[in-house]
Length: 287
Image (cartoon, rainbow, N blue to C red):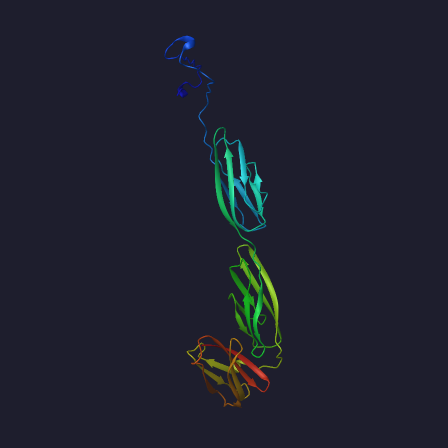
């Protein structure tokens, strides 16, 4: 180690152990003298939304006397590689796991840094009507959206839901414009469908009916108030539209309470339909 003589002229003298001139036991080839190798350290960071078709900026944070850079941004990246320090703005055309590598080279050493990122796709909202029963104006909706974490349904009748796969019963007739909004880390998407029911009759006034308790352990009380006609029939359906009970029309007194027994049926959702001639009013019962 002659580093202590830096800046001075140094003479090196070599001789063989035997000292026998040309027959010496020592041979000298090329001798190189170098400065100490300088360490380089690769580092970088990213900024931006990790979504397809969005700009993600990769910024160099490397240290040392660097003479070259080699970036590889992984599959689906545009551009996929770069050879300058940056920063570099990258767009990914495909979602998934991406391995981003930066290799830096110094005068005699090199180093690399690898970061794994997860690029998400944009949400796509979609659904279909799995079941529809015109008699009780009931629909069951199946959500087939992808890349979403939450949902908002608008049933077109002033009511909404945040369930993934909701059921819904309408208290009016005709056509309803159903909207599904799907929300994800990379935005929002919306899908639409129209539900049409054949029954176009006028309905009772819903405020004239009182049902309690609801939910219940199986016994429901239906109170008929004076605001609606007193001669009424009752039907109960399950969520598949199967009729469980059919009580013919008969006269009920003002504020009379009708007792309904669903204790022999499994816990779940049922529908009560009140009818007067060809007029209907539907209610949801929770057992």
